[in-house]
Length: 460
Image (tube, rainbow, N blue to C red; front, side, top):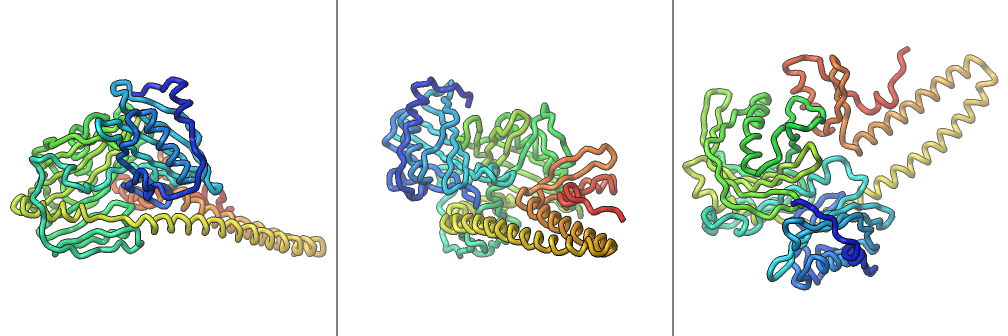
């Protein structure tokens, strides 16, 4: 979607907000918002409203809803309209509630009978990658997500409920199906009989060929085009990554578009694709699968974009008979918004308690330092020992703080020891990434924990 800035009168109208009490956006009676993604840092919700027949009214009413939810009016950074479709547009916003700052995006699309509204917000202190998680494509929830040609018959048979261990939701599993997914807020894989499988909510950051951002082994590169063209460009790269990790190679032999869908973000593109893929295992085994994928590409910056993917697949012989039950399981996914919100509140409380404990520890440390200083003047040798003890204690404390800061940030520095180039890497995947990088050039790449960058141990 190309954007045009709205004229000043429109922007003024957008800024007319009402400060009222705080009900939950996802449960507001007028309109009713549906949660499509949520985490401890933010949420993405959508609704269809019939009380807004133009873009201006839709934005005004939505920002009033935001005010009710947060208990404080948002500050509008900018409003925009689609230069090709004046009935579509949105606005970015910032809001502070309970001392916590959040930033968000509203997008609206005015239809003939109703207006589709999507609202996504995230805390400003969220780790890198959380915004992308909120914007990833949710799994299909209704038959309308697939064209009539690809629509399976309604599945029959009971599903057993798999509750995600962290309490964030549940999904129904058919007989013979299993999953070790721990949460409803991350990628989940369901394994079925005969090598059938479902992957829900996978997302990847992709660099464009023109990007000047640093690349490491495993960086995905493709032009920002249509979902089908992006997937065609990335499958060989996915195959190479799989082989490096000891898995099978993958080759797509046919890839067709079943339908286009409305993307979650302005400028994004979304399609439902059908594919056939051959997997060649390390031991010479070969299998062919049929599948359907929901693929969305959304621009992130001038040099990168995000790919989100949900897919169902099964071997040729059982795909058609397995497809109905796979769709049935996808439609059974439920999220527990109350638990997701509770986990967010618990983390905020834990952070506050940690800072309070840190202040108390610092005061106690200062008192200990005063006592040591008194002894320092009595005996030079004792003073030197006390100094070393104090410095070690301060450094150890700082290094512990660095470990916690690194955990909160969610990334760690990786250095190419030959060139000296340093890159920030996702903390949860850093071990595997460094191991992969060193496969062909052992010892070249090394991790540098934050504690060793900020508070290195002295050489003695």
